[in-house]
Image (cartoon, rainbow, N blue to C red; front, side):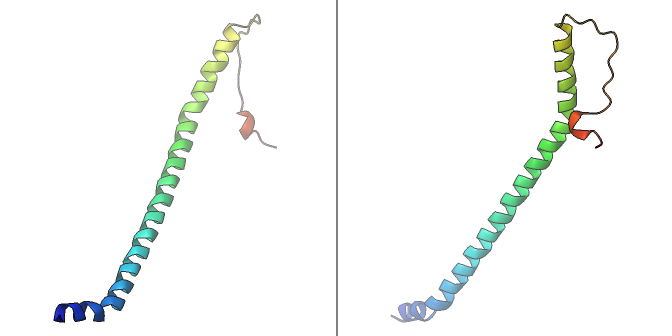
Length: 85
């Protein structure tokens, strides 16, 4: 009986503590999700910067090799998306 009364007396503060703990866990989960998404975007950018230029170069070379044009020397000054205005 005493234990039941103690539980009833502490019910309000216990509930508040549980709600605060739940809110804290939700905030931490949101922060982790944001950090994960940021890391994924950074990795994607790094992979794109490192691999995309080489991939595009190889693709262009393959297409030119199959072309009836005969090119002796080709120089690419800047990617299309990074040309100065």
